[in-house]
Length: 423
Image (cartoon, rainbow, N blue to C red; front, side):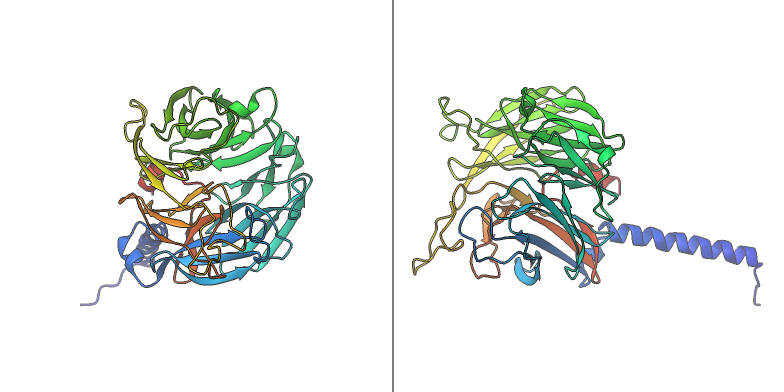
């Protein structure tokens, strides 16, 4: 016997089906359904920005995005040309839902007093907008909703503010500028879109503090410090309750409590790696990563040339524990024919930054090493379109599902525990 349901019952059933489909799609796009990641339609790529001014030795390099497929031994699969005016890159950001990639860059090879941001399509690299700003630019951060970009006005500038840029158009709202201190430099927005972490090299000891700003009001909430010395690169945990900060005069990092603003721990590399006491005003740890599971902190060592691994699983109650030192390339390595493996003349001061995959399985040094975080060793090396080892401080992961971007990482390696739990 055929049962006929009233139209309102049919509508309710269809509504429930639609909601279930939407829920499945949400978790699928969030990467939480394992079979989606294992399917042929899910691809993980590392986007590496490159330009002629990249330390030394890259004068003939064309501005581009080199794309490596992470799950295929990081092979180079695509190169997207960037506008030729991009000579000196300062930062990279991406937002998957809007299919956009943002590159901050100086006005020329040497001019650090003018800055622009270019917005391109993630899939084909077509320019959406290219905007110049009153001062310079640096490592900005895009809000998780993809609406705002908090952009420093330059580490070499006396301008004491961060721009607030409309991510859709590139236009700056001057009335929304965030005033902290001169010489603004690095930026991270918390995963819950409530806080913006900002560093600056300004006068009156502002450079010894990490500034925390309300992401909605653009007003200062607190300052973390005073730090051991000048604040350099930093990262945060997923709840934005802890900050991990590189500083001058220290091979290691400091841990700051965001709520109180106090420094909880100062973590040194042990002998023989520990920085001698007589060295002053030097940058030796310029690069830090908190693995997404928030159990390890990796720190650059530009004196001994390598990476230090610290166990931070006991925080905030217990101090970080040093575990291991891993040697990396310096930059002057040559092949059997005597050619530099990096660029035309070699480079110096390696490495000076750490990037990473979203799942925390891999870290990538400025000098292009691929690091396995579980094994805690180097397993390979990124190779660029010029056939030589990759060198870049500007890389992030972008994941695609059936050709469409669904998830994007960051130029800083931050904790992601609460991010994954909340999805």
